[in-house]
Image 1: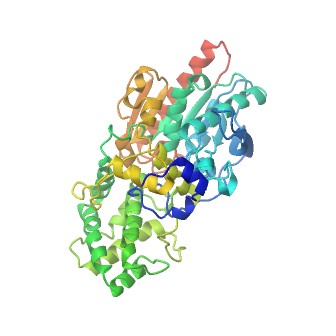
Image 2 (image 1 turned 120 degrees about the vertical axis):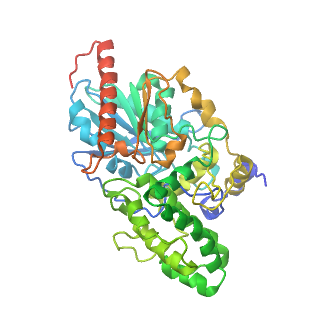
Image 3 (image 1 turned 60 degrees about the vertical axis):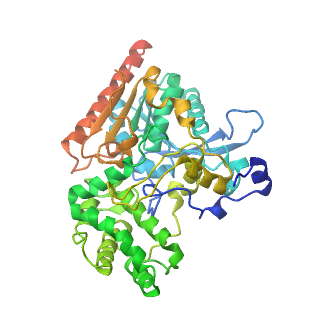
Length: 495
């Protein structure tokens, strides 16, 4: 099973061609059926490109690439106005800019410049173009350390090249993986930013310090809280799907009910189950109180709408699947525009190929289920099995402890300062988040009833009071960081 790096490079094994190999349970990957706009709903911004190093840590590769970023100076006050910098995560930067209204809504109040920078190997920021993920000699530069160094080099350049920005304090923000990057940037480069807002950042979701069932338990609870019959219907649907898939007529029925673009052979029933489980694992992230268009166009409280269809868990197989299919369509076809569903094809605007590689190398986030405390099929997770799958697919060994060694895991309070860790408690990713305040400057903000980095979204008419209060608390802390910076550096600046 072990494939050496030399053999892999010499043979130029193409990652994309073997993308069908299963490495892990993808219940809650945030990368499916993405109808994302590639334009920005906000105004008064520019899209620019920064010439970035491919390799920050050796002198053997002098290649560069164009890294995309969005910048708005509409409300920025020169000189020395603050810079709000979003650490781009695993996808097209327009996706995150469109869904981080917190920055756009509050920049005027702080006279802040806004920057969203795209993560290397995602969107248009591909170091080697379409060949970037073809082999390890090119894909090997997709690491957290390189991404953080990208942001560091860029911030230094902004200070040096934008008139009036030389002494502008930088606040790093991000959500989900971007939130992890924001926190880690503050830990790694504290001299380049005054603080970080890390929303829904599961920095503790790594092997040996995390219960791998945590995500699926919270996801299930979100459905159960609307109706126990809802989660029970989902729990019972897996065996119904497997029974129906044993016959040609049953597979035809399943294909029709789930509006699949083509029928599937019996050996691909797991693909169908993974596709459905992925949707159930995704919806709890985005069960927002206002209509949204993040991972899909959805109504307010989409799980509530889903559960209206799932009221009879004791139905026969076909009746149960008919209900499940109607519920699934809330995610896949709420607008009625979807002609059919391709369960073997991913929309890569959130970078499934690159993220799958990162999940194998250093972003090893365990996930499992037992089928009792959650509504998913039982699935174990062991590092050895996981790593073996990664070796088979990419010819690499998963790095079990890298993130913990590099950034501290549970021990960040020894050195880190000025980080806000915000978590919506209905967000399954909160299972791996920092939920308790660690020091006077490492603040945990728990938001009952909120979902995945909901505090970073624009204020909506249905936002609960506790969410509005969380945003205000974050703004107050950010204001304190900035005020302290200006006072310490004897800079006169008012916001």
